[in-house]
Amino acid sequence: MPWPIVGNTFQLPKNKPWIYFEEISKRMNAPVITYWIGRNPTVWINDAWAASEIMDKRAAIYASRPRMIVFGELSTGQTNLVSMYYGDRWRVHRKLTHMGVGLQHVRSYSGFQDNESKVVALDLLKTPDNYVMHFERYAASVVSIIGFGRRISTPSDPIITEVIAVMQRAGELNVPGTSFPMLLETFPILARFPNWMAPWKHGLGGGKGRGRNFYYALTEEAVRQNTHPECYSRKLWDEAPKYDLSNAEISSLTGNLFGAGSDTSSSTLITFVLACCAFPEALVKAHEELDRVVGPNRSPSLDDDLPYVRAFVKEVFRWRSVAIIGGQPHAPIADDVWNGYLIPKNTWVQGNVWAIHHHDREFPDPDRFCPDRYFKDHPLYRPFPNDKGYMTFGWGRRVCAGQGLAEQGTTLSVARLLWGFNIKKALDKSTGKEVAVDINAYTNGLNMRPQPFDCRWIPRSDEIRKTIEREGRQALEDLAQYDGETQYRMSTFYKQEKLIEGKVPANDEKRR
Image (cartoon, rainbow, N blue to C red; front, side, top):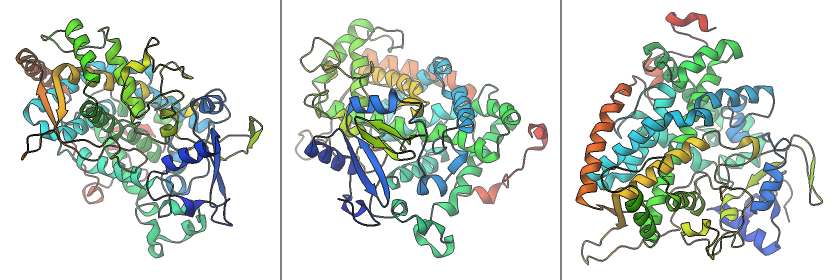
């Protein structure tokens, strides 16, 4: 039962509350439970079929966001698609987002996305111990090319060293719990205190301009330098007068590319590596299929018929989903009744992706990484509410806009890395024995990733090694058109430029 004023807040565990909600759901034999955060009820959906019925089939109702203090009012609020209430302005932002990462554009990105993954394979030959940095560079570079027409060539680029670190920190903070800043959702009155006397707000309301102006500056820089005329920044700049976009809105639209496509994509690839180390038996069929269809003299492409590899990618998305609670909460725009239960307007509604993807009804032996479970003739196959077999990217009208881009990039990367390498557990330096990996050692953030672990990257043959080197060198030549460097740093932005609040470049004053 909830306590007065604070609700169930102080009954929350310190770590991984999604497992706690899963346990409550199982104990009560209830696919949907209500948990009170302060005076706000949160509906937690722990079942795939319930999630489909509520947030997919009733997408028009569950299309909004509830009132959020931390990642709403004290952050980008109603200038950002992620936290924006459903309505006309949300439709404008969704339309503009689809101009950048909508399905109709994704296939056109496959060329440089493929080349960047070839560079990853080449980097893994040179410095395999730095595989996490190679993944982060790859993921950030793809979205940087889309957004700003500029690739990220080294792991020391400030987009990686600063921006991804900030996003990972935000993910760590955005978890229901008994510590600040999320405790502000239980005690919203504390958000009214001025920043100078409210240490619990440090890094929130007082710092939101920094990120906004940083991304606006990157956008303006891309337009001014005309690095790549087809980049998303140029499209936004041209559309800004039509939709009366503010600087903050432009910043949020370009910044969301990194929020949705860099940290999450790299974390997914790290999970892929962990699965390879923990379940080496799953690689046998992948290697057989790749050898039979592709061979050693070229790497896989999207046009190859690789059903097992595609099932492998599905299992990566399912086994340890990055957005473990499905992103930000949904909220119904009107009162709704589901199975006799009232869900009032503006209620927090959260999908527990962990519970959904680990329900043994749909996924027997859920902690086992088994791509075969997606084939109808396999004993582990079970029906699922959607054709994909996972709910990693959310639901309804709030589904991740970059889903197609993420799926395409992960498919390319997973296929190439499976084709190119035997990915194995690290060896203990003193005993020479393999070092066990912990499949449950993950971070506690909204976008979770494995805790650091070592592994071995062994080229599968000398012919494949030569192909990786040849294709990697060619990829770098093809990507040279996107080479460049930004003058901006998030950490020192205010000291370098004063592109803030309403200022536009002299060569494009007509934007307003």
